[in-house]
Amino acid sequence: MHLSVFLEVCDALKINGASTDAICLRLFSFSLRDKARAWLHSLPLGTISMWDELTKAFLARFFPPNKTASLRNQITSFSQREDETLYEA
Image 1 (tube, helix red, strand yellow):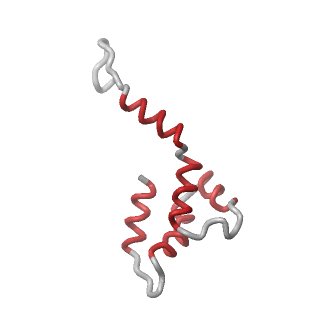
Image 2 (spheres, helix red, strand yellow):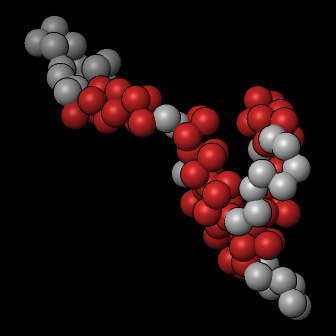
């Protein structure tokens, strides 16, 4: 969700001579806080030069495949017990 909203903002910005890729790379750190911002600033300079590289690194760090699979499993295996309302479940 964070990346989707961020891309909406970047797509709305137009700066003469700057690609959307360059705008996203420059502004992404301002959209982060705490651990995510510290992680981004801990990357060695020159490690990431394209927006696709940054999104892959960000997702791998904060949403690794095992975490995504676990969350997907929790959603798909949801069940309501007999003694609870849907709201409680």
